[in-house]
Length: 215
Image 1 (cartoon, helix red, strand yellow):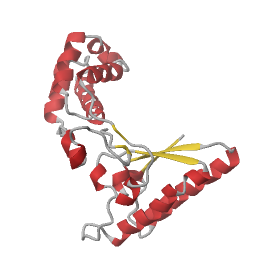
Image 2 (image 1 turned 180 degrees about the vertical axis):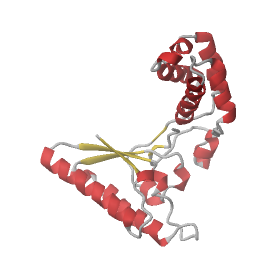
Image 3 (image 1 turned 90 degrees about the horizontal axis):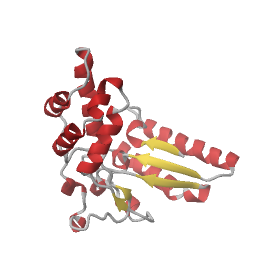
């Protein structure tokens, strides 16, 4: 299994992004040939390079060239023993050619209170300075209510910021550190309705792509 984060393969040089993408796929094709085994490729943040080719001024010639390069590589991957799973936070911005050709799709929403609580415990148990808080059920329950509508990535970043607060004062992490990180960390809450196609806002099922994931 391999991961390709499309937000990180971009280049400021002309044709640089196209070259990076082609190189990555060529390497995977060679690995598949040598190993005689299927490859699972997870492509994260698909929207960063696969947005609509709408001819608007917001789309440069270079951007359209990237989409034109990626599309045939993705569509021809299965014939080369490469299975692709993609994820995006911005389903509506994806090029229709991609959305129309996928075989399975699922919407993955934001975590609920119970899931946030488990995430908090898992992350905080990794560090000695936060293990007491990780085992404080009342504090975790209180914090999980305050973290509704934040992505797992934002929550993890909040915890890192809170740990910095405690580290700077050479003490254990306390609930107030995380509350401070929520307030001062400039993390935005997510409105899930903005991430769904208009005709899917009730069912929360996204047709045509596997992903639309928050985080």
